[in-house]
Picture (cartoon, helix red, strand yellow):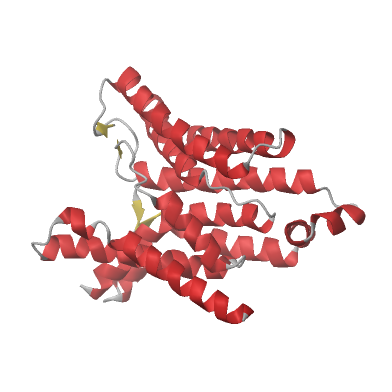
Length: 295
């Protein structure tokens, strides 16, 4: 049971972590992207629909990433070029993506409910030779799909980019003091625009991780994961490893909710609130600690 719980926790963590890594880039640039939920949802639908239509996993993934990145670029244009409020633009993106997926589901698949894509190639789990046969550890280390493994690798890459490359130094400088960054020749617009594009790319991967492994799409299947990812961004405080730990906590709460649904007679609707309760508690603890720091 313990190994199964850890395995489920890591699987549940993947979409939250990927979206949170994207949100982290915009947060470091000084403009938090709250449209992660919508980008994940749009990518989740597009990737599974295109993969089903083309029978190609790669084309499906690229289609989902293209749409989520396009939405992010549009957000950046409105927020940076047209000076629109970034939070209003983010909310509009979430509402647009929710309405768009419902519209496309009805128009293309003739259904508002669960959409089954039986012809789509499945993002299968990878069984690592020899490791999979190790008692206990085999279940924890093996049996994940490529995106689950990639999420951990991307966390390390993001850390190296942010703390060990000129782009990372410039991005953090833009977020801390844009005027000083401009005075030394750093383009605030360029770094913030790229941060939005990266957030769309990572959020798109999070959406792909939701639909392709299951070969289904359900309206609103992100189920607040984009908002939870934003909390992970805040708790991570600009460090990819901090974001990973925060995402892991939320992934564990989702796994715990699923486990209780299988083992108890408690209402599933009530158990589904557990991740959001944990999110609220985490933000409350963070706010209290931050207040004591400044006192």
